[in-house]
Image (cartoon, rainbow, N blue to C red; front, side, top):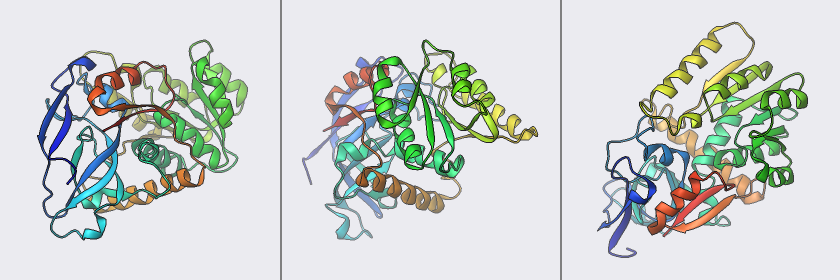
Length: 343
């Protein structure tokens, strides 16, 4: 097995990025039904930014190894797993544990990566890709000719979402700061400057009859505005509370507020619908179904990446040992795409 030590990044508590700790531990040994994956790329997502503040709504107790997803090569397989999986490049959704050189996973949770897709490129499409695909196709069910609004169109999820929506034949309006507008226009997105424009007013100019779907990761006031921008029969998909990232207090409260609003809006007779999207929904009570759906959808995302419908948006590739630098960069709001950690 590659190396005799596993290097991992530990989040010891509520710390600044520089408080992340690097430690060396024995390489894990797979049990029955498991594999050990040698990490080739893992990412810095909004979840880790919330976790270091103690504000991710179901994060584990400190200390723990963060890392929401990863791509790597299977180095060893436990009893019951065929040897043909060893040497294959795979991806996995982990929630935690991905920021390590070696990660032990249930073999049923890994998804093959096409030969033509590199590790860092695939990494940009794991949690971001599955989130975007399922919100677009399973929740909003966007079809050709629809008009959609994507908040944070330059971000990790947003940059994948706008490309998948365009590939589906939708007209896309995307909010971002002005520095990202040229890149968004190149993708076919109509950009709106959320810093210097009245977003609801501008979107109404672009879509007087309302939009067919809004994808909102901001929460707070934004989710109310998003609901008001929907056309008859439109769908709001809320999937985060970025507006509360730096708040103090409970990390669960903003999520519960969003869930309450979604419930209320769906209860009212208004010819519109709302969802709060959670990538882990269903895993606790229907694990096999969850795994089958994730495998099918992530395979679709990788296929889009392989044929060019989706272009990997890599903001930077930074060594795992410099995770603090990567976290700072991801939190800066100055980059487009995903910050990727590599061995």
